[in-house]
Every structure is written in C-alpha cells, then in structure tokens.
Amino acid sequence: MPIEPEAAPIPESAEAAIGPVRGWLWNPDLAAIPQEKRTWSTYNYAALWIAMSVNIPTYMLASGMIAGGMSWKQALFTVFLGNVLVLIPMLLIAHAGARYGIPFPVFARSAFGVLGSNVAAMLRALVACGWFGIQTWIGGEAINAMIRALAPAWAHFAFALPVCFGVFWALNVFVILRGIKTIRWLQGVSAPFLLIIGLVLLLWARAHAGGFGPMLSTPSKFHSLGAFMKFFIPSLTGVVGFWATVALNIPDFTRYARSQRAQVIGQALGLPATMTFYSFIGIAVTSATVIMFGKAIWDPVVVLSKLGNPVAVVIAMIALLMATLNVNVAANVVSPANDFSNLYPKRISFRTGGLITCFVGLLMQPWRLLASYGNYILGWLVGYSGFLGPIAGVLIADYFIVRRKIIAVDDLYVRGGLYEFKRGFNGRAIGALGAGILAAFIGLVIPALRGLYDYAWFVGFAISFVLYLALAQRRAKPGARPES
Image (spheres, rainbow, N blue to C red):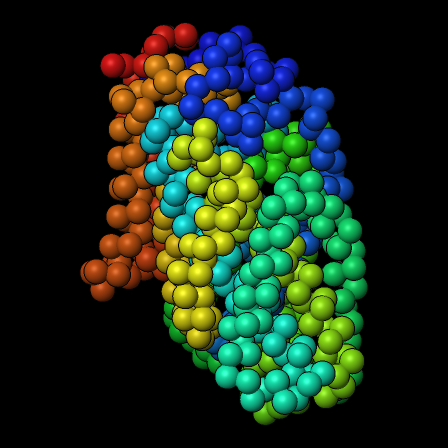
C-alpha cells in the first residue's frame, strides 16, 4: 500500500483540495473546508457534546442498566468507562478532519478506495438512519404526552402517536433543509439550558422520593461476579456502541475546527463528563420510580407524563423535544447525509442525503428497537457496534501507522489517483473489514463463542486493525502510484 509523500500539502482552499478538475467524486458539501472557514472553537465542541449527550437515549441507556439489575454505582461506572474508551478512537479519527478539513466519507477513501469508501459509509449511514428513527419516535412520544396533558381527550384518538411522530419528523426535515449553520446554532444556544433542565429533573425526583438516600438504596440484583459480568460486558459494549457511530463520522464536525487543540480539548471535556452526569440523572430518577410508582420505569417520557401538573409536563416535554431535536440532527443526519452524498456527489447533495436519511429511518421500525431495555442495549447497541468497530480499526491503522497521517487530498476526489487501488476498491481494507465483522457476529451462530458478540465492538476493532496491518505490511516508496 502506498504512502503519500511527506510534502503532501494541506489544502488552503476547497479549490486546492480538488485540483484543476472537479470530477464526479466532488461536490461543495464534500469539498475540503479552507482554513479561513474553520471557525469552531473549544466551546463549540464542548457544547456539541453537551447537547448530544443530554438526550433521552442517554437517559435510557443508564436507566436500562438499573432495570436490568445493576446498582447505581455499577451503572455509573459502566457508563463512565465506556465513554472514556470510545473517546480514544474518536479523537484519533477526528485528527484527519481537523488537519485536512475533509468529512468522514472522503477520509474513508484513503483507506478503502475512492469507491470502496461507500462500503464503510453505507454501514455507518444505515445505523444513523436507525438512530434517526429512534429519536424521532421518542420525540413523537413526547409531543403526544404533552398534548394529552393539555387535552386529556387526545388519549382516545386512535392515530395520536403516528400524527405526533409525523409532526416531529417534519420538524427534523425543516432543520435539515436549513443546513449546517442552523445545527451549530442549536448546539451553542441550547447546551447550557439543557443541563439546567437535567438538574431540575434530578431535584424533582429527589423531593418526591425522600432524598438521595432512598433513591440510591436499591442494591444490585447480581449476587456473584459471574452473573454481574454476564450483564456488564454487553452493557459496556453498548455504551461504546452508543457513540461508536459518531466516533467514525467525527471528521464531519472536526473539519470545521480552528485547531487540533480546540477539538481535542472540547471533546475531552464535553463527552465523558456530560454523559456520566446525565446518565446519573437517568439512574437516580429510575431508582426513584421504584419508590414513587412501585416499579422501575426506564422511559423518561412515561415518568414525566406522571407529573400530574399539566404545565410542568408541557415544560418538561418541550425541554426533551429540544434535546432530541439537537442530537437527532447533529448525530444522526450530518453523517448519513454526507455518506449518501458520497455515493454520487454530483447528484446527491447534503440536503438530499438528509432527506434520504429521514425516509430510511421510517423503515427501521424504531418502536421495535425500543420495545424493551434488552432490545435497546443487548440487541441494537451491541449489534451494530460489530459493524462499526472494524471500520474504526481499519481507519486508525491506515491513517496513523500505514500513512503516518499524510494524505494527498487532491487524490481523494479523482479516479486513477493514489486511492484508486483496484477499480476504486482497496481489497485489503475490505477484507480486514469483513473479517472483523465475521469475528464479532460469529457468536450469534456458535453459542460457545457468544462472548465474541458480547465484546462485538472490541473484537471487531482488534481483528480488523491487526489484519489490515498484516495485509498492508509491504509499503510502496513515497509518491508511488497504487498497484494496478
């Protein structure tokens, strides 16, 4: 596999990034961002993670662990450890976006080939479509609960939830059509407000449950280390899988960074702390529901609908809707929109890709994924991480070890360049990716190897990382063209 020359320049403008010819692999949304237009600061990245972390799925991730039998300390430790672990590959993959101003699907071309990148991009995009459906369904539930609080007769309308789901879906479409500047504005304005709402929710639960002591007194249901590990391992994988999606497409955001320092510090401050804090709210409030309602309720929409005061319900639901809209567009639309655009850049723009995401999300049947905490954590989160871990393994091995962080940006946008490989596909990367996915999912077929599936992201990452380096060990001389 060739290594680009050490002198490969970082483009000063989008024009430089594509050379003298704008081929079909280029469009304005996928072009490299010129340095003078990279304006996101440390605050923007911290705010991005605060806004994306403070949302209902984060709450449900932690509350699902309580419903599954963990104590509050066990659940909180699992969330914190998982987010620290996923931050590592996230910062590594983010480097290319900040250095070269390129989005994820274009970055993937350097490892998988100018056409092979679509394999990685589509795997990531389909997961994002599923998340879009989940978030939109949750938003529809929140609107439905808000209307029922104001007009109880609404509960008797047979199509109440589908109508609310459609309204929230349309709101997401509106933001998508407004573009990336609206997304940035949403993150910056709403992030501090959402943290305040979280604190209010926590204090409300504390007041009604008799204090933090009773709220957090429920012991773990696991009476042996073996029983605990059986639930802990897939739960930890689920936490990693929760952000394994954004860990791949993080260049879609870091391409706007003023500097590497800005994105690294912003993300390091924003992700683990906010996820752990908001997860604690989910853990504490879910524990409080055992005292308040006699059973653990892991869905915050259901909890808030029981507030009794219609005004309080409306305020709470508006806050949840804002949080859901923020994370849905930022985490679940930006990436697949670019990924779908990567399929045919001359015909599919960012907005068109976003609309495709909206419609595919409807087909993912999100209500099934949210039917129980088992479906959500052990099925959805762990399952798709088996596809994303191997992609991360290939990208990190290629960029940091094989290419030593050197990318010839011009060649990312043309056929026949350094990243053509064989007919646009890097067989080594595709093979390593397939092996990692196979290793992650073989446990579903062979019961004796179930542990491999429980560690799906980690197993897939390790296999693809090591195998790709083994396949790419023969390096071409600097500046050499790819093998034909």
